[in-house]
Length: 187
Length: 298
Image (cartoon, rainbow over all chains, first blue to last red; front, side, top):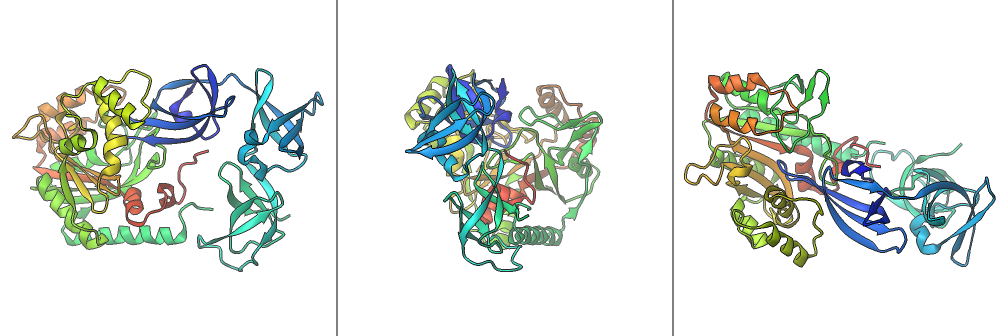
């Protein structure tokens, strides 16, 4: 069981007997009143997104899903292929099941794949990943204190915002949950 | 990397020094009370962080009232406050409170004072005033004292607002409707004092002498954000004890606070203002952007 205070983006819960993933949630509370959590949840089977409100402290079941670690092999015609390194069994996910995940997927990467009744239905990434910048405007030295950013293109084709001092060719650490730049990771 | 940028830290520092200078020039004394204490004032909707030795204070109220009772006169404090389980786009389990008390002043006088400060320091337009019941009726079309849960449910369905599945008493409905339908409309353009809260939400405010269904509690809103909560303070020990007894009993009651009330709290009004909310209302950005290290939300 989860309580509303356990909620975070990506948490998988069971609502009306179906597995859902929390896409977004909003905590509201008048200063001296009852708190509520309103969440946007995505049905992991149908892909439909619905809006629900729970009283804070309310409990919900964990979704009856199984998590396994698979290796990403390749993408072909909008289908993403993964392999279980223990059984060598291969599975595929559709493009819309991957959603924004293509931004972080590189060959041989290990990711979490969620199974429901034996079929893969969802993907989760390590919280942080390191990717190379293939294009951005040249860096400005010493500018580490302001919030100004510039766009940078990654080896996967994704575009992220980075601080001005970062250079093309740098490897950077990214928070896959938010898509935010964390730090340079040149080694 | 810290979350609050250097420019935001500078805005925060400047706001705090302006507030200190202004309050000091108005004759208020800066005080310092404990953040960790063996006992507290229980409030049903505030979950305290509890250590074996005591509680982290959800506000400096109890101790500041003891200072008032001891004759300290007008006082203010800027300090951390701790509230368990409050985490979201407008909440962080640790935040900063500006709390101040004006002896000899009622809630009207306190609102006038706050309005002047906010116009002078933040260059805001004059504060509007609206009674709670009027704002509630305006936003929901419901009569606060007589609506039924069925009416509330119907309203939410008409508005496409998803409602909780569990049992909801009238108070829960009130908070639900207030959070989703009333509050987002408050203080847009100019700050707003929402006044004369219903008696069942009086908290530590005195009841209205002209209408016992109302209290002398107010809240301060700007840009749909709740910035502060104020009371014309309840000084009646018997009434205070009765209200505290109605609270659920996980918290060791601060007897020193009750003793101070018994010794006599001067007529006074007080207000608590969330500094990070104020910064967000004044300068925009996300709530978390006003914390150097906001509580992690994974």
